Amino acid sequence: MAKRILIVDDSATMRQMVSFTLTQAGFDVVEGVDGVDGLARAGQHTIHLVLTDLNMPRMSGIELIQSLRATPAYRYTPILMLTTESQTSKKLEGKAAGATGWIVKPFHPQKLLETIAKVLP
Amino acid sequence: MKIDINRFKETFFQEADEHVAAMESGLLALEAGAAGQEALNATFRAIHSIKGSAGLFDLEALGLFAHAVETLLDQLRAGAVPADQERLDLLLESVDVLRGLLAAARQGQPGPAQDTAALRARIVAASQGSEGAPQAGPADPVVLATVLGSCVAVCLFDPQRGVGGMNHFLLPGGETDRGRLTRFGAHAMEMLINEVMRIGGERHRLLAKVFGGGHVLPGITTQDVGGQNAMFALEFLKRESIPVVSQLLQLRQPLEVRFFPQSGRAMVRRLAVQATQSVAASETRYQRVLKAQLQTDSGGDVTLF
Image (spheres, rainbow over the protein chains, first blue to last red):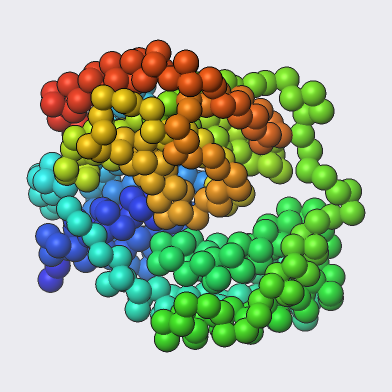
């Protein structure tokens, strides 16, 4: 069965681009338009990996990670941040919240897939 | 990587039907007095999704109408206007119109099946509270200024919140790979949107003004650098469903732009042709830097914790 990846980003463009990259590579994709929506989708589906943006309306990527980590089903699921932010302080914030890794946008499709392959259980 | 978004269209229509149904049941619950803030929020999210996707698939009539409905729901949500019977009736009426617009779009009809302008105008009127004009600094204490040749500046603002910002970018010329070509522009746009949101702007309320993209680089006649910049900015904003309320693009003279982010007011002055040379020279230099950066830039840096 194909692994399912949740993409959380408030940019429709970004969701389409990431989604296309992942479905081409054979993944199932679920999309969330912000942290609140992403959290709801995680409750509706079995998700094997989460890719989330940082700056989003209603609930940020950091808050989303904190909420997911507080959910038993998602305590160990790989979560990658996909964001334009590249400051070390932000990355440390992500790490403290429970992120598995950090990818700086604009992303390279091949690098994204390689990173996913590395962290997928 | 090329993306044909039409392949996602059927999914959009299925989702849109569900969103409209969700709106309808939310509104009926509100009318019955059985529901509170959460029903309003759910109704808002439904129309927000429809609007966003409509922009993605170039469904202009649907996007425009959905935007008006979304604004009214946002005002209701914020308590700026009362959720009275008149407004609920308007919204229920708009559910029928949305179904009509979706059906027309599904059959590939370019225009709306019915005239939606009148209802839209009533919805817009109902969104405006009695207090009238949105809050904005009376004296416009902040001004952002820039000079543009073939570069583009996007001014972004949330009129209700009275916050905004401006970027200024140039795409590297002579690049055939679209991903590489647009990388800097997409980055500049995303940084701007994120910053405006960080200082309190609401994404769905953002409006844009776009300036520049002129034909001022004399040395480069084989490629239209300014046009490329202008097209990129407009396409990006359209995809992100951010309405462009004003634009002045692709002129032969450089422009001086003054943007007042708190009110969203912009003043644009056309500079004399004599100024063209120095603006063009500095932009040509900048473009060389960008190209060099593109050569060495690996991008997409990965950190695993």
